[in-house]
Image 1 (spheres, rainbow, N blue to C red):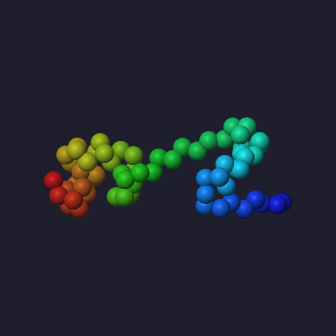
Image 2 (cartoon, helix red, strand yellow; image 1 turned 30 degrees about the vertical axis):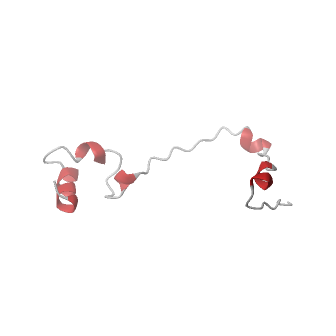
Image 3 (cartoon, rainbow, N blue to C red; image 1 turned 90 degrees about the horizontal axis):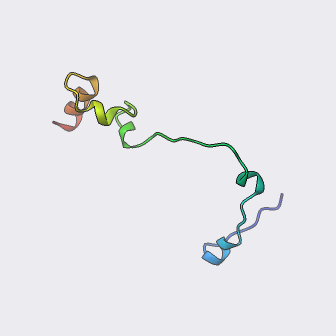
Length: 66
């Protein structure tokens, strides 16, 4: 398979064409990682850090203050 070479210019990138298999793909990825994953507690961190008595609230207070 011969891979084209691209230069770091707009003209070079304009030559790119998306493969048919990619354009017609029915596969998707949902990425849910964000800043809330820093403390390794998942998507509900932004909510639970305000719930007194919750493990994530305690972690947030110990680590970052109130």
